[in-house]
Length: 331
Image (tube, rainbow, N blue to C red; front, side, top):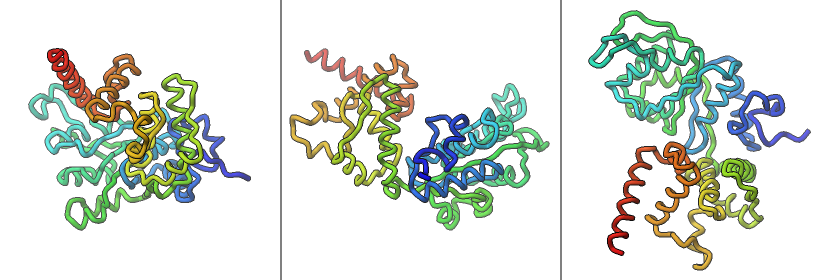
């Protein structure tokens, strides 16, 4: 029987009604198949999972798959960016606080682990968690309880923890940046997601998936279907940004209404075939304007479309306006 090319396991058809289409994990690669089996098993038993791999390989997608396959998909899925945690506020954000625990604590707060209420807490970039917070996370894993700031009474929690990192945690342990006992606790099941360079047989499936997805999103009838030469170029490219980069390239082509183009290809094209706005500042201006147009001026969605933070987009819009005003004055 032919093995399905889409799905988290060979039971793809049975998962259709449980796993949203956008969360499916494509993969003919044997390593991906093995990871999918381990992910499904981890979801079934609810154990702690450590997802490792380069930036852009889809670590959060795997975390969301584990959440979806864990029985009740209505359970909360609470993502936490550990790189953004600060030692002064993180304890309250993670474990909650009591009213009056500190200046400005006008009411009690549950914190991430209690708010998850039997769901999944996704600790993204866990390798960058401040060292002083790591013993407290270890206690959650060991005792299944948290102690809110301003309280001496532990509170039981029932969550599954899925952590992700693009760092080598064994090296971080050796450097003294990460607790060894916490590393072992997190590493109950490790899903080491391969780079796109290591699974090039999956690239045609990704191209088809993203092309159909963005054609639907931008209400286009023309789904991109590359010729064999272009497909070969995409399959032999080194993909430093992995699946995320491939997704952005195809999405950008729908935003800018041009054929998807690899970064290294533009300089080799005849001059008449190149985009007329290769100047970086002009390209940025065009991308921002078209993203805003495609989202009806919604800055949050436009920022997501461009792959930047909303604050960054606001700054870019301000800079573009200033440049437009300079050009207007000069004219």
